[in-house]
Image (cartoon, rainbow, N blue to C red):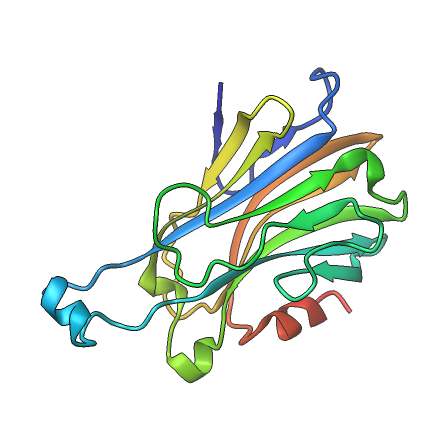
Length: 198
């Protein structure tokens, strides 16, 4: 049974749920459809520009210092504990737009936190922000059973924000936990967002 989290809530991922070591972290979003669209406006270029959101994971060591970034340009961590599904350029369609697969038992002991972020590609140049996105969420799935463990729907007003820190998976007393963060930022790209943890 899925647990629906609110901003700031946390959940145990490994305690009491023996054997959960493989996670699928699904991230999804939909562009807000403009009124007056339709077939002809889309056919003749009046349907609005696609919004290319990119999901990434920041691997942090103690002190929240950046160790590595897994994103559409580097789909696998050096330790092979994290694999990215690849880039979805539009956000159209049902279900997860991008997925990140995490083997918790392969994450090096030096890594204590995995921060899942979404940014809009070329947000400044395209004059786009998360006020143009709806139905954004992050969910955690037991990869072995395909059971959704928890879901956090990002329902705040993110107008003017170009990046989101959606959630994080972190170590606490030998267990792995998930925290729903939902923090928007005005970082223009993944590089600037990652530099917060430099």
